Image (cartoon, rainbow, N blue to C red; front, top):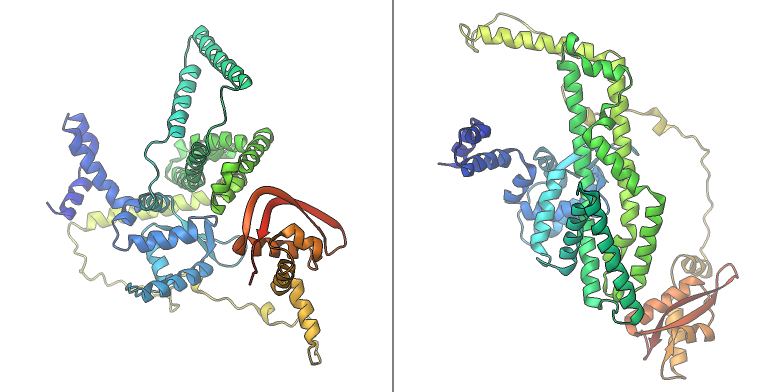
Length: 506
């Protein structure tokens, strides 16, 4: 049987019939997966011939810190990447705008109006996120079993066993066991029998935490999709319900917020309340600072360190965004009911159903090509997307300020140098200072250079010396104090790892 035949069989078969009739569960599973393959965008992405291109481009530009990008800006970025890919021999005939249009139709991208400018933004759909995450995991697989993951699972199972036990005495006994275990560990620490875990195990735990944290922001896309589906279903209920069964309309008039009171709304409200808890946030950020101060944290990449620092802020930002969506949907639903717009939609629904019913009756004796002798005057205006209309704004052409004529003069080389020093670090000066000091001593640190030659650009000179030493010198574990005078004349100091110059720098 071919794929289209299987799809047709799946579409015409109710999966529940197989289970009710006691048929083999594997058959029902196959039919269910066939239906999923037809409608699921993640599955479409995985089986697409261009899946590496889609996942690589969209995962890079929309799967990182930026989850929503202005459409025109995204087109520019992808066009530049397409040129590089074509230079590698890939056949990519469309432009970025053309590909994004295809990916939007396939369900990989979601288009939304921009709240900051006249235009639209593009972001990944929840299904596309799932597909891209799967491919990224296959490209860089994590360890299948880790100690920290098993320990976390064991702790969650034990906590679930305690919290769900109906016997109060049994729960108390289990909690007392935990207290005794903690007391034994405290005694072990006091006696010196237990030391801190080694750096390899610490890194494993941090990266396992990062792997779990990477999935949390992606959940917000699915949460938003749930609320969009809920909003659409509530509007459909309002339009489809009869006058005698218009319970949703009555509840909206009474001020009941169906969006916030739904299961998804209550679940998200509990999550958001936990994220915005000031005590939890302060404790979390303090723990992150302590972890990053540990010696093993030096082996983390800059992206991993940044992800740890920004994790709580990311959760708060996404939580606020979902709250705005919930508020917008609730207000729009209430306005839809109170303005009586739903009555107009009900009339339109009735007319459409009457037309469909009449068409079904006429189909028995009238063929589609049968002449009706009816005329319909069509509009002479070409139909196109509203987004394609370029409106004329006279304010854009109005000169609001007087035009000032500037007299030209020869630029001074010293003035240009002064401007350059205000915006860029003078590495030539720093290199000269380091080499002059190395001509007298075999090696020196950044602190030695600052002691001999003042930081003429303030903290810019300090950063420049550290940058040169990191690239052409060595970095010791021992700390040293850097002292300099800022551009505002205030003395400043910082404690950093000792950066040493061992030879002439270029």
